[in-house]
Image 1 (spheres, rainbow over the protein chains, first blue to last red):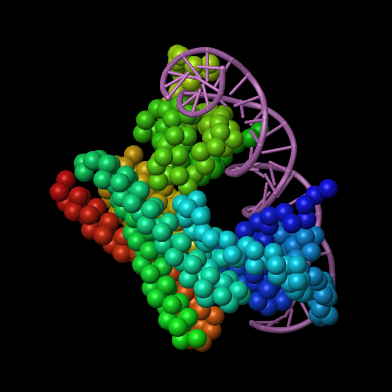
Image 2 (cartoon, rainbow over the protein chains, first blue to last red):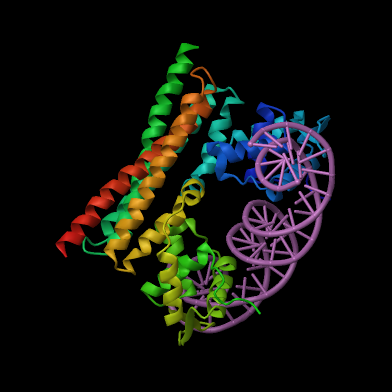
Length: 188
Length: 188
DNA sequence: TATCCCATGTAACGAGTTACATGATTCT
DNA sequence: AGAATCATGTAACTCGTTACATGGGATA
């Protein structure tokens, strides 16, 4: 027997988070991926609809038919209590260094959904943790950078510099965000 | 009959570029992905070895056996003339706006391999083109940012700000790189 | 002697891509 | 009348992940 609490895919969580904030049809979700900066997730029907059916199978969303004036009846998904728990468990994961290396988007996605938790203490912990990972990573990349000879391959060196610049931008962002979140906590 | 000039995967090009710079065995290539900032590409044997065999099947690399003192004889791959052409065709692609949205790594990978072309004019064109894409993208994201209410979701706003910061870092990098590449061209 | 490193490989699986299909309604 | 939009779905394919297997040499 399969474990019905099996991991959802990134796309699955992206969809679940959107549904948690506002019940939506598959078509509406596709539009969001097409027209907003969330476009790093696929908006193709071949990705969305199978993913949505997996959410149904996992019982984290339920469906309601919407009487539209179109050929196919739209299916509006809303999150179930069990889905809410699944989502919150995922949201409460702290960022890991692997994610920073491979896929910073995944971390940002989780962060952007932290409005759902509405737990400023956790948000602050999240960003503090991210900060330490970024610092480690930056140290590592800087060491590599030192090791490359000054007269080595230009493009390789520049590409590495780009990596450093982006890490620094993330670090700067995390510090600014931390200040803002702290101010909000105190203001409460 | 299959077209033997079919597209290689990102991983395929990443490997081909490394082999072009220095003939290597699969194991050596794996180590590179494990220990350098190129770690965004998978170093797992289940990814590398099938990808390498695809390179062989496409005749872009050839194999030479290395007499080692180990159980399995290491296979050293080197690029073929046809592979060199395949690689250069790929390198001469200008970055596209889709890539900037989804996978900046792919662009940086190509850029870091431009040492192989050794064509400063093209390198400059490459970065200039990237710059215009980044400017467009930045304008788009900034517009979205304006549209979000000041008292809207905090985390969503901050995540968007992170996207802007990273785009700005990329833009700044492209300007600095452009200056450096231009100086090199004049110095020649 | 046990464990790590070298060096390659396979098999099952999951997930996304591309391309196609359907069919009513609304815009031009 | 023709095109675009709404709204969902399927099928073939590619690729990467995870986990396992092999087996000799080197290190502790």
